[in-house]
Amino acid sequence: MIVYRASGLGACLNSLVARRQGDPENPTPPSVQEWYDRGNEHEEACVAAMRNEGYTIIEQQREVNLTIADGIVVQGHL
Image 1 (cartoon, rainbow, N blue to C red):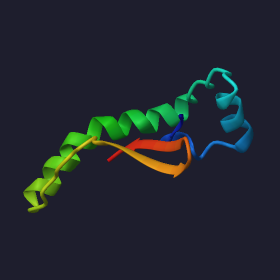
Image 2 (image 1 turned 135 degrees about the vertical axis):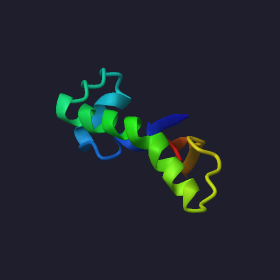
Image 3 (image 1 turned 60 degrees about the vertical axis):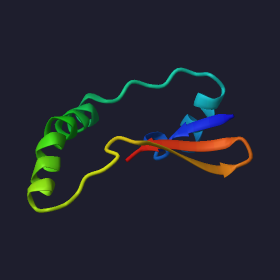
């Protein structure tokens, strides 16, 4: 089975093909990693704020798999 990470689908076609052929993934640029880190830092506060507003948060970070063709899956988290 071939599994693509949902977060990586925005990469160019050449990058996606390279990953399938076993080339190592390029490191995340520092400017992008900074945004990822900020999201991780604020996630709990955002969830708490939504709960305070009456939202019910369930299955946080649940892994989901979407089969898009025979043997090809896109995997991500909610």
